[in-house]
Image (cartoon, rainbow, N blue to C red; front, side):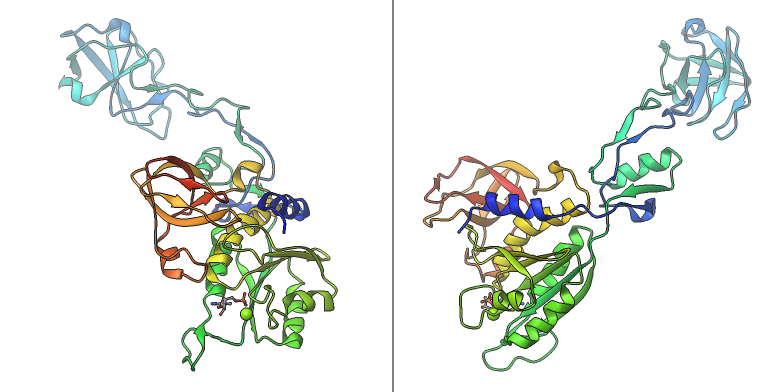
Length: 393
Ligand code: AMP
Ligand code: MG
């Protein structure tokens, strides 16, 4: 049995970067930048007003003294107005600053009488003026290769006038579920049967990584059906097979992989839940065998499949693991096993509380969890201790 770190290192080593592609900004969210991007435009683009008010020369404004309003400068055109001492221009938010003006007085701080304004207080140079380039200089790096494209990143790219961006490649993925006992939701359960819930789980986890699933197939515990499904599944970049990777007589995935010519690189990882995890390859396809117990499938997906997918999509190192935060334990947590245990729990107001049963079939607890706590083998974390937790949402 190998450690999580060894398994992750091997999986990442095998995850090949897919060729980058150019996509419209509307399709770029949650992808990863294929290269560094530098600003081609300073922001703000020109000096402009941060308020609706009056542009003035701060040095010529005295409290109680009037300024003569010589014109109006709206946003969207540059009327090339120029003020002299004692003059002001009516401006609106985003309007270009008139020449000679170095401050804007909010309209609320002014009393207007005809074409004169009277200023209530002091005026500081630069007040309510958004200077060209004060947010971003031309040539400044705005996105790093491998960085996740978020809504706010998209806004910055659009503000640069861009409509497209080069992002990492698209992962084509397929899912195979296995098990004689499984019935598709919507059908009726016979004695001894349960509903198949892993395909929707894994599909949603892929979806969260920005990958849409090309094919989902369910197989009975039957070598020939599994082999047939595998042959189709191997045409994708990533194939996830759930169930049938354990050590039972009906765990047929490992021999089926050999039969279809796939290699198994590793099998069984020292982690709880999730020990039967398998990783193999066939040509360009990375194959992940996840244990059928839903919590095991969930945990191993996040620890070992997600980083590999993100790496293939061009993500940099920082993006690969789940976000980590420090939280205080609301109760004592022990791990009596000889494997690291990922305890499911809820974090709220900086406190982590384990939720539900901590066994690998226990879906209800998992459904309430928003964080995982890794407890090393044999460890006791006392209540009140500060521990690092992995955030799920
Ligand atoms: P296996 O890994 O095939 O030995 O399955 C371990 C446990 O997970 C068994 O109790 C299975 O019934 C259950 N299981 C396997 N696959 C699924 C699935 N797709 N949906 C729900 N439960 C499953
Ligand atoms: Mg099974």
